[in-house]
Image (cartoon, rainbow, N blue to C red; front, side, top):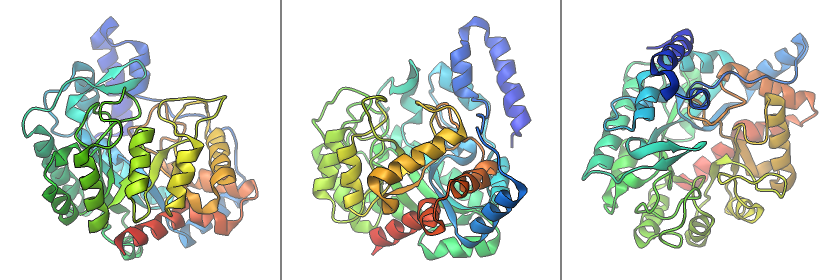
Length: 383
């Protein structure tokens, strides 16, 4: 495994070897520094945060702890080969979960990683999948995630009751997820296979333009919303009890999902568009409200888009609560694969909790945001 010092040092070495070919903005994207917090807590305030976390399980609803998804990927674009070459660092991140007081997190595979490339400040699909490639890569990633369980590093979370069992074990709970349903192709039986593999969350689409499920938010539409295969796949996901995440879905794709939904859906890592702050990864207030009306939530996303510090992220959480209500907000860090993160280590979880308590947030509201809303939705989609 790779330590944080090795990651930073290795990144510097790659930059030196690559010379001008690896531009400094790309270096920052691959190896983001830890952002300023923008506030401080007294010893008493920190102790209160730690006490709160001991009594209320905190759950990160979308993350890539230690970047397991890069392990074994082949035929990558050269920039992503550099990203992959730094390796994985699950042991360090899992240790930080324990120290920071995190009860569980979504450990998310990335179905389309082999076909992606960087463009500007984001990612795009640079080629089509080879025949069978998406399914083969899904199977490889699930094997890698299961190995974390087999090594005793994490506790597998299959039902809401497993969160308490994970805490009792002294290990973080791992909620298996897949970002992008491209591995399903047109074979709906793979949804049941994924469920049997332990997958409990699927981000419906990711960065593949014109993928089999439907349109994404960061590229021009191809399907005009959900595809026919996507409609059938969405209904099957809800039937088996899978939590469906609409974070990367184009607005039309997401509204098609709302029309079909019989259970809560979520947006695990995004924010709301405003006249002052527009970004392709943000969603309309109407869509956010529609997701919440299904019983779901929006995960507050600490990407450095319009914010620069952890304190700014606390503002963002409060903004979401103001417009969606306390039942409509959760935490979704996108840890270890986020863009310009203002929260990049689970060691800062007590700071997030303590900062919100310092601002006067009611503990019952905070308990919903940090884990309660996820638990409610997790139970509802499995009912």
